[in-house]
Image 1 (cartoon, rainbow, N blue to C red):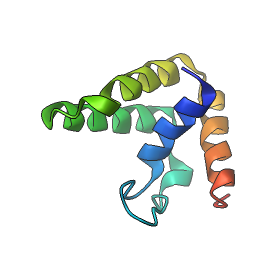
Image 2: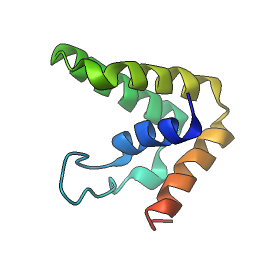
Image 3: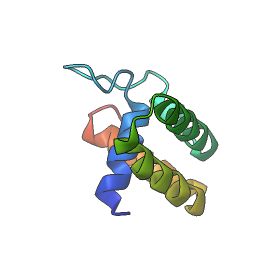
Image 4: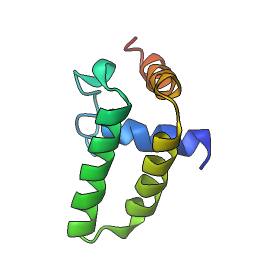
Length: 89
């Protein structure tokens, strides 16, 4: 998985409503850690599977595996990079 695809998958989790015209970051996005991110990814995967939305499931599964393989510091850097890009640092 490329870093850009990983960031997009994580961004989907950090956004309050990713399908909104003007999506905003979750107010708790700054406090997300590796474990919480993995839990949120798992929950999103479960919802998509239940709704039979196949498009994003494979990417989210790959993102989950990648994040599980990263160190906590690498995950924190990934989240920080996303927050900086959104101007929320």
